[in-house]
Amino acid sequence: MLAWALAALLCSLLGVGSQRPSLFSNKGIVYGTVGRPVKIYVKLHQDSPVLVCMDANRASKETVDPAYLWIGPNENTLTGNGQINVTNTGKLIVKDFMESLSGLYTCTLSYKTIKAETQEETIIKKRYDFMIFVNPFAPGWKSMCNDSNDCEDATNRNILKARDRIEEFFRSQAYILYHHFNKTIPAMHFVDHSFQVVRIDNCRPGFGKNEGLHSNCASCCVVCSPGTFSPDVDVTCQICVSVHSYGAKSCP
Image (cartoon, rainbow, N blue to C red; front, side, top):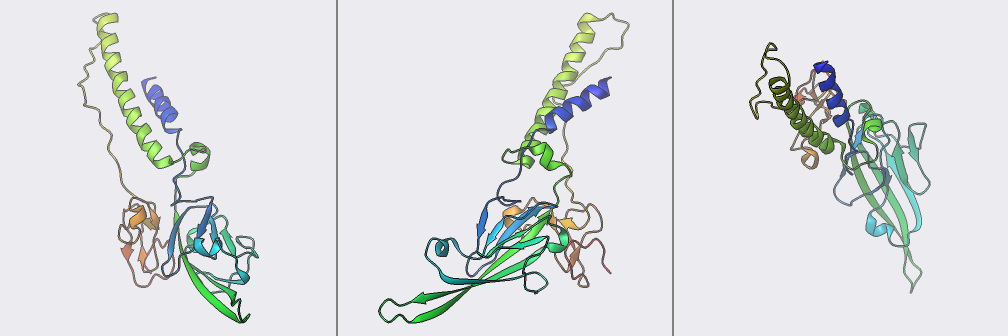
């Protein structure tokens, strides 16, 4: 009965959460940046944000005869299929994101500028790079997190609440047994602050943490890049020069 009560308490507390902010599975729009790649983190089996083949400054201006060319991680031209959606306005969405879809997505924007005095036309080209990585949130996160702001942070706060309530449960049980039951029942003694929660830091196989590569998401488990692998629930990806794909779980 005691175990059931504790399990119910934990489930009720941990079932409240939310989705991580824009570093993950952002459902808004992500513009490119000239000269440096934009890093995006997408939850496993979720859709990527809308990637726009244009920077925010360019998007605020009139663009004459724009043309867009998207190149995927395999260096092939992206024209759109069931999983990759490319629109006529230069927007790209990757659906049901998986480890193998991680990598560099490049778009080249071509457009015209026209001099008012001479009507001379000039073709301008700009390149935008998007590095997309996959983050393996726990199965069922979407149904549990609802529509709040940050599932991971909310879950961590709720774990601390669970710790405090479990501690209070044992304290109250010790008091009840001592004051309301006969003395034949073995005494329960509870030492304040003796109950602790220990954080276990690990990532699933094929994923790891890399503060250098993912400084804006240092605590995230991110898919292992080519040249690395993770065979178990370690925290970091190990070096393996013979790995040429994302999410490797072994070193051939």
